[in-house]
Image (tube, rainbow, N blue to C red; front, side):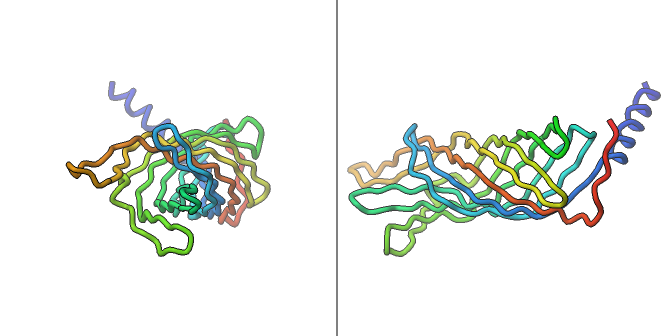
Length: 205
């Protein structure tokens, strides 16, 4: 048993030692909406950005993670007034990717996000803090593709939000509140820049 453990440890260390590690920066355009009880808001354009790290285990497989300031939300028109809901998160997507063609990757994985601010704005009115109506932690499944050329890269991704609860207060005789299911959905178009000065070496299978 001890020999098996030593062999597995040696294989793991060798795999990590031969892996290719990259770091960089990423800028993202978000097209997001909010789905409440099956009803989707109109799309809102936002921004996301931050650092990323990528670890290649072989020529075709690896994992990438990011730390993004992420603007989500939606907009809708009520009574002739446009209301924008701005939800700002600190997001941590972790995608496991497959590279069927060199420089072209397909990835899927979870995205975990912490709510920083939540505000609503109606036309020229001042912003209203609505953070209390949303959960502080958002979960999603992200999937998409990326293509790199040199140190630059472009990618497209869909982030499908998992269900959370939103509490909408209203005045009634009993002072109750309504709990509804909510999902944040985002389409992302991004440009990335690898900070490594040297050209990545091909990783042997």
